[in-house]
Image (cartoon, rainbow, N blue to C red; front, side):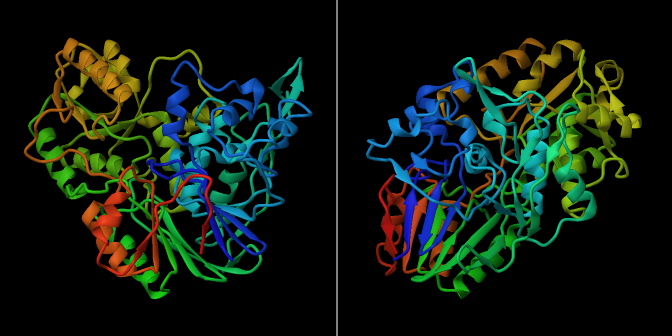
Length: 517
């Protein structure tokens, strides 16, 4: 009898780690970081100790006690697992056939870093290359080793990176066919001059997975490109998984087609995200673009800042269109340009080549050192470079893609007349409220005009990456599974109440408790 085991994503937004077992087949739907659990014990300056590998993650419940699926080099001592066997949550697994990776957000991918390096990732070309670009351009960190890992060894009682050891790449099964030659080269390229890449197998995903179960995948619209939903045929029927999706983005038709395709296979179980639950707001990306365009048009001669979520390339391209429409250039940071380059390799029709598409600039912060990937990037785009002095001379020529983490650059840009467009989600926890308060302090100190940061707007400056509650109920009714399991939500009861008269069984998942299909 097939089973689903929930190790995250139950009564929380994100942290999805859902194990499907059917005979000899074992698959994870995502393997993400639970911010809910992490936030109970850690914050910006208090983190799990890298020198003790898996230990702190097990002690705090951030990772499930599943012996056999984790990197052996992250076991801090020889008798590590024996200490955990008496725990009720302990379980030994002899293999995992793969992780079905829905998209490249950390709450769906962030704990893959700890998995055995031979467990393959099944995902789209865009998600794969976005993930690599993110890892390449971030500081080296055990928690960010999604695409490739730095081998560890025990030394003086703690784990340390093996000096000069090759990076260990994870196997990739590409859902949308083989990678292009440029994309494959980028995938296998080491970002570190001091380490080579020990490349892993790379191949198209195929139509089956595990012990022969049929695999289907469906492109969906989300606030990051390359998102996908999945369906796996088990001995008890199809199990479908929405990942994260929405209908109101510019690629909303992809989600509608995915819903129709899931309905056609008549799934026994639908694992459906419910981030927005009873939220019925209906802001769209087109509405965001119209509102932001009007603000920029009224800011003639002023510098414009655009603040939106990291990796939200759709929003970045919206501001690029606004920049072109208002005679400006969109100045992006090096990491954003690197991400666009990676995405262009995977899907040229989705992401522009900034070296040939007009209207881009690369904003350069004053720094003493550049990473290897940055040096290569700047060597290829010397004509696009702009710094604080250039922007001060011509503030009305630019829209700068900044966020709270870049705001101290204002001290180099001032004094210029400026407008700040906050086009990201409002604060949903105390830590975000504190950060937004600091952001406001910076902007008010330098006399920057603020739009969207808690101010009342006639029209929205942000559209969610998730379908509204009413849209989710319509999706479920169209797919019409025998059983619905709401995940990725803090309001699972909304689904029980809304579907009470629809003849669809609603089961609320519980951590560590198997659901028999």
